[in-house]
Image (cartoon, rainbow, N blue to C red; front, side):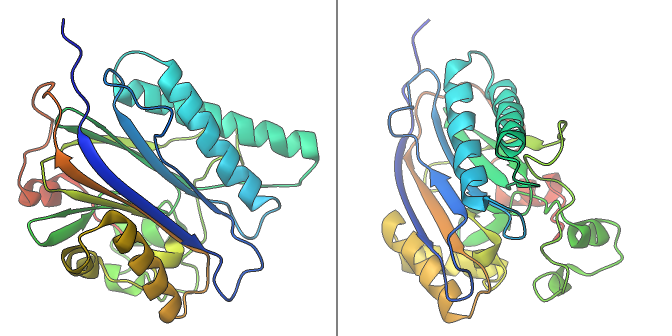
Length: 274
């Protein structure tokens, strides 16, 4: 069987501490040194929890373990990503015990592309957005107390960004031995843009703005920097980080993805809880 060619991807990333925090607890990883035609391309962002010790260590350690585990596996991306997140969770948990650090943890959001299939792995409240045909859609649910209130229809989605308990997580990596990450598959198309960002970015940028900004700034490096700069201009109260992935050309298709190609399909397929 011929090995499929990977997608041709342009990516960029930016991260700033911001004026409120003393240190930058966000981390991101791009697939340099890890990508392969057979295994595809993986991009990820993580936000170490500011209220806990060693947030930067937690986020960087989780991403390193995710990439090592995923690219050491064979088989479907969903299985490899699940194993990668479980390994990342255990690695952070064990580091906490080893350092007697009290509690430390991190969010983690990753996207993987192989052929025409996009796999999203997520835990916490960093987000992944898909921009297509001038529209943007959030592909992740916030694992927060406020996000749960939205899913229960107790709180309207437009109240999330200004809610006092927006960042109270009910799932993350490193705090417990067992996790329940979200892992989903959707179709990817040439011309799509993917934006991964920490809550320091999305808390001050509206969902529809991601599409307009992506149209205004076509370069991935420029767009990631613009998103971070805009977040700081709008007085974000957290570290601000963004990874931008633009699909220039798909590799050999591996079969139809589970969700249809038009953005309307994503709107039907995902619970857009905020």
